[in-house]
Length: 47
Image (cartoon, rainbow, N blue to C red; front, side, top):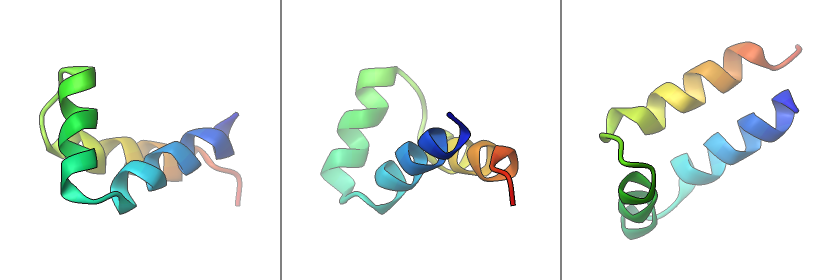
């Protein structure tokens, strides 16, 4: 589950700007949520 969250966060982070914008609109959040989601997922993944 944790790795899945990281993969989702990385997918959004690596996406082109139009895809990121669509993701932000879909989830009703602001731009920094992309980085925050990645940060949270990265810290949760087992090393």
